[in-house]
Image 1 (cartoon, rainbow over the protein chains, first blue to last red):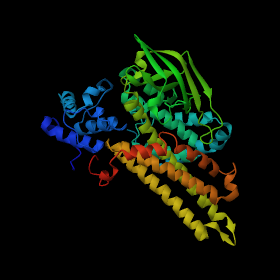
Image 2: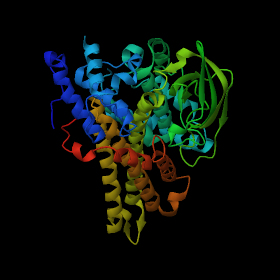
Image 3: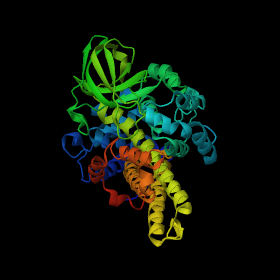
Image 4: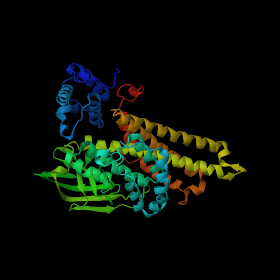
Length: 92
Length: 378
């Protein structure tokens, strides 16, 4: 799967329907396996030591947000749906 | 962001201000203070720090090229740049506002020297085995444990320490004048002898809870990972500098050394050796440039490509330096030549910031084949 590197304003602020497939593809690519939308992938045993930083770098670049030290809560990043909710909060 | 300086300026700085001190520093086991001052005076202890925080705001490729030139001149000076900047990078990324505003400008101006303490005697590559403890009591934390292989731990004024708290592995910033902190110089290293290595003991060091960098429990997955990612990028470029130096020294020697009626460079076997090390050095530089391009773009793949660059560049440095010693014959084994130091320093780059073996394991977890077209994560 190939997608562009940047979103334009309206697309960037779109709802879960746009973000979820993108984030799902990134996580599947990073972990080399598919994950369900509510599956806690930190509990799967497939998360690599680089994944946390790769995911944050991806989200910051993709959605033009800044993940701060106070955002470091596994709940924000442990499932696809939680990531989408986190992005929505950062963009609101 | 600093206006990009020509590579020639970096080279002149490194050759004039650092290279003459490299051998005496190596022999003395202590980086000449004039080198530290030269880096400080030129702002080169704040390369990656934004100008708004007192740094030069260099882009990753400019920083890399400078690091390569410094590494070419003196790996111990490059090591200072590496550890100092990797701590700066971690604080810039995960430090709280107050710490960032107070400490980062001082680091950038070289008013503080930073070191990084991760390894322990029983926790090297396996960072999850750390035994240094961080105990919280109200608004304070108490740090106890012993760290080893702390580059520039002998002169650092602040150390980023990775230890174990109730929440998990956690990063804390420890001023070196904290009561209970003791340093012990480590000497007789094979390479980077002027890296002023130390073992650091923390005997129930009392610190404000604000010394925690990032959130407690994220010290390894995010803070140390950020630091090591920067460190790998810096070491990779430093290895490029070693490889370049080995190639240049080998050509210079082969052009003048006559045996059997002609100079070495005209011998077919020598040409093959020179070609192989030249290509290895160029390939290492190309991988570092690609990692730099991706870092500049903020691409997620930069983390992996930085590991690729470090893995390849450190191997290229060892290969080129080993060949350089061989090309110099018996002279190559003597301290009077720089190539024996290059070989000793090159070996260090294969071990620090993730050994080549660990990088093979980490890279093996990645779908590298899927990224060959470069189109997925940018």
